[in-house]
Amino acid sequence: MNYIKNIKSPDDIKSLSEKELDLLACEIRDFLIEKVSKSGGHLASNLGIVELTIALHFVLNTPYDKIIWDVGHQSYVHKILTGRWHQFDGLRQFEGLSGFPKKAESPHDIFDAGHSSNSISVGLGIVKARDIKNEDFSVVSVIGDGALTGGIAFEALNNAGYKNSNFIIIINDNEMSISQNIGGISSYLTGLRTAPAYTQVKKQVKSILNKIPKAGNTIYSGLEKFRDAVKYTLVPGIVFEELGFTFLGPVDGHNIQELISVIQNARNLECPVIIHTITKKGKGYLNAEKQPHRFHGIAPFDPETGVVKQSSNHVTYSKVFGDQLVKIADGDERIVAITAAMTDGTGLKPFSHKHPHRFFDVGIAEQHAVSFAAGLAINGMKPVVSIYSTFLQRAYDEIMMDICLQNLPVVLCVDRSGVVGEDGETHHGIYDISYLSHMPNLTILSPKDGIELQAMMAYAVKLDQPCVIKYPRGKAGDMSYVSQDYAITGKAEILKEGSDICLIAVGRMVEQAYAAAEILQEKDIAASVINTRFIKPLDEATILPIINKTKNIITVEDNTFTGGVGNIIASLIQRNQLKGINQLMMSWPDEFIEHGSVKELDKKYGLTVEAIVNNALKVMDR
Image 1 (cartoon, rainbow, N blue to C red):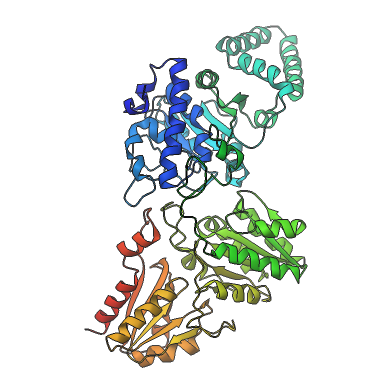
Image 2: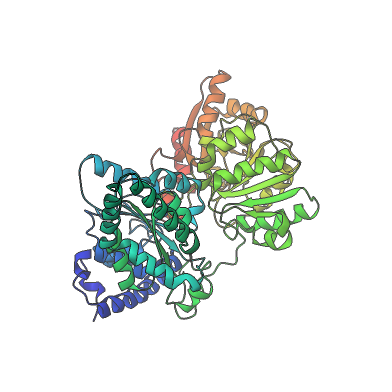
């Protein structure tokens, strides 16, 4: 029987038997493997959460009850059970189904997600609003063991404990396990504490003892001390208990009936509850079970072999960065590398093998990563921090106060700068120039190709001040066919000289600007092409004379409009009181950009070679 095709809403699974729910889980796994093998996406995490998601929707009544998914890349099963299975052919495709929860997509998606560690804070906010309004729905925040390393998760736990209101937090633990020799006792105590009769007995015992003159409180206090001693000895979640939570688990995250039972019991408690579930990432698909990290986020692949289709042999910016850092570190023992749970993604795996004592993966903790780097720098080391642009936003204050204010020689290598494609709004790195360019003491570089990235890294580690190098996801181009000088000396690079118009480009847009200039030349328009290289400090000495000469300029960048290089150039023109300048800024609009391939997004928002040519013709009034 095809269970999935009969699901229009979560109500359609509530009448299924225990055996049918298990069959549904198997069917969902087959469905996920089939669909993600075609579209690409986050497979391993979703395979690992199938039973938990089924149990949640079996017990809860969404969207009345609320589920908040931390990070959100594990919400595919949730989307299937909420009636969106028929949209999976368009998963992560342009104008198709998002790979993350989106309120605009379904009322069952309570909160747009994509970053990490905030689900407990959000859930607690919904709980308090519910209580103020005297509502009675359940709130469940689902957070992974990895996301718990984020500082905001601990801030929320500290705030959520000891409340006389139900709030369920589910820890989806797919990395660590708790020793089985305490599993039986833990299960017994869990059942005891969640039973309504136990809760009632506790209240009755306290009431009876309090009526005993003088001795009652002493006896109850003694019983509490005995209970606490037992808890410290036997209960694995004692840290959470001390924070004010009732801790349930560990629970087999692949046993639907056990999960249903513990979730139902948790709903009956008038206090915050933590349910610790043990799951296996990639569950049910051997290739993903053996290599869960490779199948965390994967391109389209052959479901039989697990081999990625159309595997590209091109060298990525991340690989160029990782290989170059190993070379630099080989000759300088002060170099240390730091990342926030992105060892593979940032290209630091070779460094972690070659220099393990100088490599630090701090987990999902970007703020800590930056301040940790500041501490290393102030004691004589040369920290290189590699974090995706969208996640570096979380460490804004630490960059400003801990690094820039103290002018420390920390190198921030900002990967995935610009649009990144199918992961969409929460992952595009189109704001980094805007939030970094106003920070004092900070140098900001952006390479046009992989060779320039290598040169910039060699330059940055020798600077005695903070430096950012920002580069895009994917293929590291090679513009050596036109660029003969890769020396990084604080100067912009003039790739082409022309007297009619000036194209000022940043990063990956340099190659597109150069291609546009070649086309314009065929139309008898002589265009200068400037590779800014240095976004900050801007090479005004090189750029200003060319602007003043051509009078017509176009800035092209992979950043949002406000605060971008286009605005920086406009300010430069104004400050120098240049007259008669026609400027057109090509950048991402001040809005959140949806998911889709980089090529599709460039075309939709007018950042292609053709768009540059057409805009140049407009500026030239042709």
